[in-house]
Length: 199
Image (cartoon, rainbow, N blue to C red):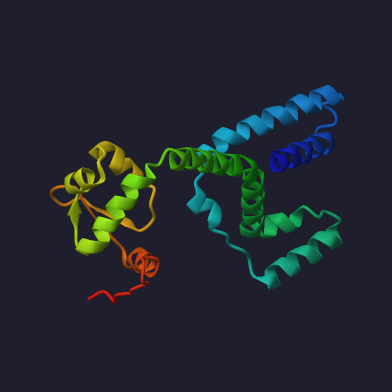
């Protein structure tokens, strides 16, 4: 995957520049980069995304003063000491960037799983269930939907979970209804294109 490939070589460059005395060979840096990439996977799973999305920065005046002092002293690292919140925000941004690879892989796996489920979707049964939900314009039990669709309750429940706009109602016996957006969309595509405004 391109993002993983780019992440690998960015890590390699960091190891080459920052750990020249420790990782002296190309093979060692390759192994180190591969190990870091593998460690990114559990890091992605356990990451606190609410914390990573929360960024705080010092005021521009304080940072400007810190940079001036750092340049005058010849020690550029002092600027980070004067702006710990900005430095922490920079680390968070870098962390999120490194976690893009595992994140995209996770997203791709989820899409592949959903595509596999959609490929097995019983289109005829779902169509009959949606037709009944439109006609009744109220909650319809899963049992009634399954009977009208000539399928099992378990199979229909799994299929309806894949249809955006089909709302499960779990108070009492499991039943379903349609949200207004899906209802209007289906009505527009029915023969005659009749559209009804919900009460």
